Length: 272
Image 1 (cartoon, rainbow, N blue to C red):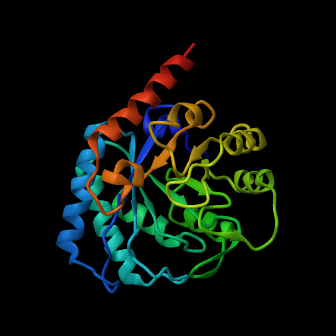
Image 2 (spheres, rainbow, N blue to C red):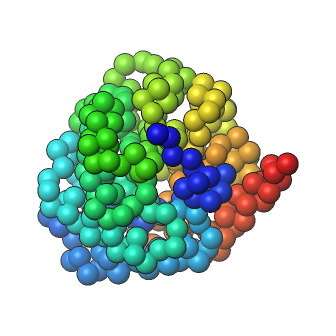
């Protein structure tokens, strides 16, 4: 089963806003769950008011990242995601950073009533500042079936930011490998947060997979939105939506509105 982004988000070019969770239990500077939830819901309200089409809950500030996710992290993520789902009028997704197999992301999504996940290590072996991570697409696909979660969309990064491929591979092969594994969209990023992928990167990925949507995963802003969204099928936006482009700052409502309006105008111009 493939989940249609149009059916999921109600638009052909969804803009997904990030909910960057403050440090979770056992991580440095954890402020307590009440404060984590308060910040998450405040950002969710502002992003929805600005006109985004979806929200993505991420353990952004829970460092260092571990290849084995302990149960308490999944529990905390489920609490946060569930509260965001309850408070939101748009689809909510979940991403647990760099977990091979994405079992926690899927489990949290099912428990919280979320509608999609982002897999940042889906089908590739990559070197990161926290060690080597090997994607396990077969494990994730089987766990998705075990949970009867075929209606939870999988947005899969290829050659994701902050990583180095363990073996040289073309962008086209990475995109095709993810598409053949049954993901619902492919995500392309620049090298780091706030760095957009070149337009030609999105175009190459689109050409390689044809029917699978391609989403911009970093660096989209009001200045490049028209150019990138003319090629891509949507975007996930995090730091740009915050004041001064800093993750830990509040959402800048005007930035959200400008990007959302750009996406809607492109969608309308593409309609027959």
